[in-house]
Image 1 (cartoon, helix red, strand yellow):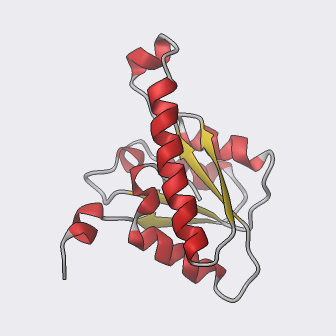
Image 2 (spheres, helix red, strand yellow; image 1 turned 180 degrees about the vertical axis):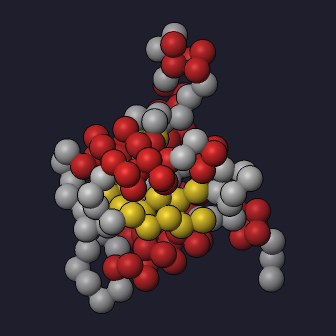
Length: 138
């Protein structure tokens, strides 16, 4: 599973629960350490890594609350590269990519889901997480 801000979204959690239902599963959560271009060029990635670690911790905690064993890693700022790096040590049956809805997702605008589908032989499930809609009380 690869996600950034949407990593703790309810829609993503439900998709993972649905995917692993009734199966023994191990989940690897990858949160890219997103950074501004200037900070990347100056090798100032501490804040980006710390923020990714925080998102990662929340996601793993939430999955484990629901009985899903999970581990995580902070990945490359390029989400497709982060997937490739993770595939070197983790052999998934499925890659779940979580994004914001169209119009609010940089990953969709940059073709992350399409690029991943073209680049990797592993099946990919795209989950759209609308954090704004999730925040509205019923």
